[in-house]
Image (tube, rainbow, N blue to C red; front, side):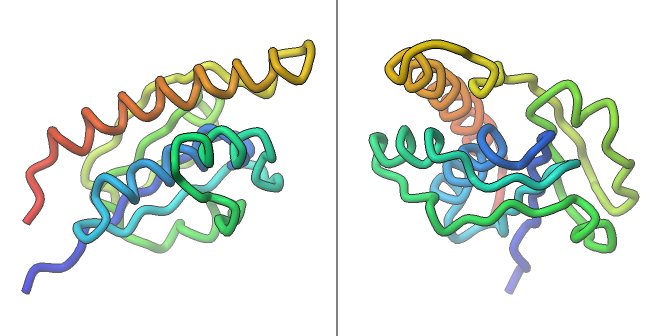
Length: 142
């Protein structure tokens, strides 16, 4: 029996973009990979991220924000950074077989009404969903 792939998704605060990506990639690769997310800082999972993911049928409310140091000793098949800051400051993971980077707009930077903030999170969610669906579909996993 082949072992599951290990995938790490990195972002600055591990509160929004990487959490949404973890949720989608876990869904898309449910029995083929262990999906983790972490940040160069640790913040709580953003309530707007939880809300917009629930709107799309995914519950990420039990996910936790983790610091990347928790994963430095693990071997990963794929390490994916989802923001430019994380891409620039994250250490190299020597055990990573492949690394990928895609900068998604940070919805936490949007100021405005509740609805404007939610809309920013929805836009990020949809971008993340499509990118990670394509990523999952491109993988050839047992």
